[in-house]
Image (cartoon, rainbow, N blue to C red):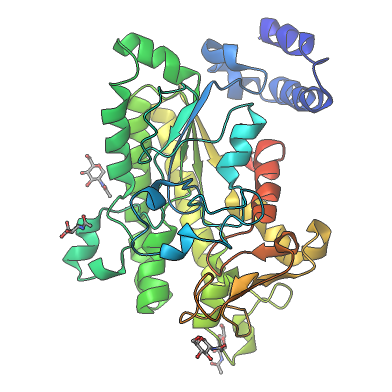
Length: 391
Ligand SMILES: *[C@@H]1O[C@H](CO)[C@@H](O)[C@H](O)[C@H]1NC(C)=O
Ligand SMILES: *[C@@H]1O[C@H](CO)[C@@H](O)[C@H](O)[C@H]1NC(C)=O
Ligand SMILES: *[C@@H]1O[C@H](CO)[C@@H](O)[C@H](O)[C@H]1NC(C)=O
Ligand SMILES: *[C@@H]1O[C@H](CO)[C@@H](O)[C@H](O)[C@H]1NC(C)=O
């Protein structure tokens, strides 16, 4: 521990940010030595981790082009502007106007944006990571939904376990020996999610089932996330981030679908639907609990919980504080209505319009966040208190 402390301090001159991060790190060390004691074996990645690559699994919150690579069959708008208008100037398959959280995380660790696994570039693998996330992906497998006659609601069959399957297949193509691979994965960051949002959209948003009927599904979704995380750790992952769910009661899609004349359904400050936000929190509580158990099973792995809810809820309480003068619960891009969300005229479809300045909006298209919102969330996750233990 002393060794690490000295090492950390020796690095503090590098930059102000690192310096501040290190102070916090050292503080955590002194205060909670027991928390970090088991990490000594992987101390080489301190200070604040020097990940050499990032691997990502998830849905449209982190898909950087996989769904587009297979033609985006259920959401062709993603292939065109205004998607990507802010940063890329063209559509990349990201469900936003620009960068996603995973892009900002890669940037913070000095790595390029993750290449989408399904987009064959033909070039050699650059060793900086790979993205397996797919727009619309569910935590549970497609069979689960087909068995309930809910298959038609799926955007894709490429569920979390399918993505983990791709990873297992792919990994044998990169390094020669298992030992070599384990060494490589030890210096990698793995992100498992956000995932599960689509599993809830199907019964809640598309079918309109009451929340109480959907609650029993939550432990199953958590189990699927834990199964995937376990599989990834078994493959050699030593640094795994598992994000929770976001406040879905603040999404224009939910606010439009569940418009209510009963004022007590709404949070008086944010205007969000309280019951749906409570549902997100319930999912997150079960996930945090399950991760605690998983840490006991794998004490050598650094298993981090990323509080996406906490990193974003401030936008809705104090939008102006973050520069969101345009709106927090109104979409930047959409087909009108009180929340600028219209299921018959989605962002990118005829009849929809785009706001002048997406950076003043929290929400992009009714179901996804703007680049500006993702940037704030990423900051809170990387430098702030919203990843625990810290990244
Ligand atoms: C998705 O999975 C279902 C059930 O397993 C199958 O019937 C269907 O053909 C699959 N669709 C695609 C596009 O692979
Ligand atoms: C999780 O893994 C266990 C053990 O392989 C399996 O029995 C269970 O069905 C899986 N659960 C989900 C939701 O995938
Ligand atoms: C309004 O909603 C609240 C909670 O959401 C509920 O307790 C109350 O019974 C509802 N009132 C009416 C008139 O439906
Ligand atoms: C939603 O879009 C449809 C199709 O463009 C249009 O006819 C309808 O008026 C729109 N609804 C609202 C509330 O703007």
